[in-house]
Image 1 (tube, rainbow over the protein chains, first blue to last red):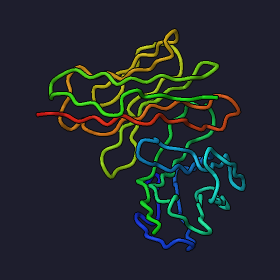
Image 2 (image 1 turned 90 degrees about the vertical axis):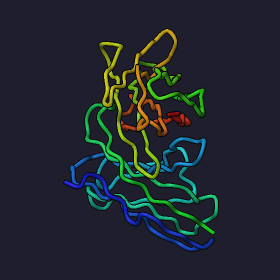
Image 3 (image 1 turned 90 degrees about the horizontal axis):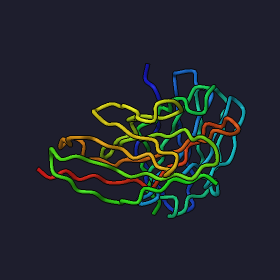
Length: 114
Length: 115
């Protein structure tokens, strides 16, 4: 049982390049989330999914796209990276049911856009 | 709109001293409240959570938090801090409506522990 894993752990991009971050969970959770963490800002929600085939925008969705084709995977895409997207990205998952249920966070992906 | 405020960006305490980290929230109904800890270079670990019932919640690593509805607060406490508690701490409120499970995080408080 690996919990929530994120690939890659580190990445450096040049402005305008694209990439996809992969989040995988093996707990059969319905809900998955992508957050970004910036100094002094806490974690801010980018996109989330309440089930396979569904996605929704969070607080800061601009410049990102997501897909949830399989229940266990939640992909975050940057089509044309910008320096403002330099951040640490965290994925999380939660089982369905009560809004207060436990969330499990991945170890994070540190992305630098030059 | 929901929001969470952690008034203290940085706190320094001596090892063995007591600790209180402040958290204030804005939410219309009864909130779901959480405290997470993040060690350098690591992900987030849940310390404790409040849904309902007893307003004093016990967590892992000797932490506790008290929900005070009248003050819209959910402060984290520990009676005696250990050097290994140095980390960043986040308070969060859960979206109880619409069953999206979203969390709104505070800005975080960095705890430094002096020997």
